[in-house]
Amino acid sequence: MPDGAGAVMIDGKMQDDATWKQAKVIVDLARRVAEKDADLAQRYGF
Image 1 (cartoon, helix red, strand yellow):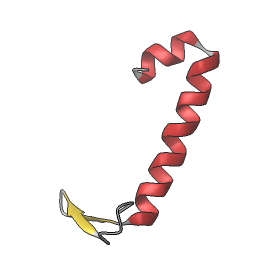
Image 2 (spheres, one colour; image 1 turned 90 degrees about the horizontal axis):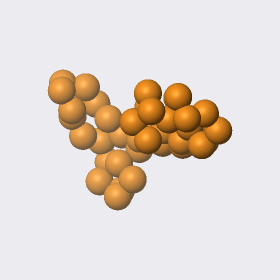
Image 3 (cartoon, one colour; image 1 turned 90 degrees about the vertical axis):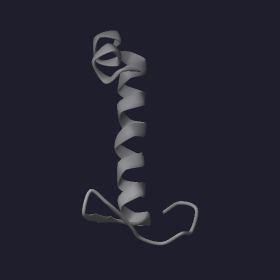
Image 4 (spheres, one colour; image 1 turned 45 degrees about the vertical axis):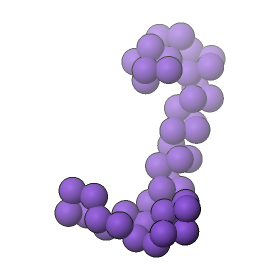
């Protein structure tokens, strides 16, 4: 995890730093798209 704790189990699935980084990339991209499109911002909950 980003705090250096290593891997953890969430809902029976292993989550590690790489998983967190991939999710962060997707969320950051969604935020950038939402800045330019109000309808998507609403759908994304931003």
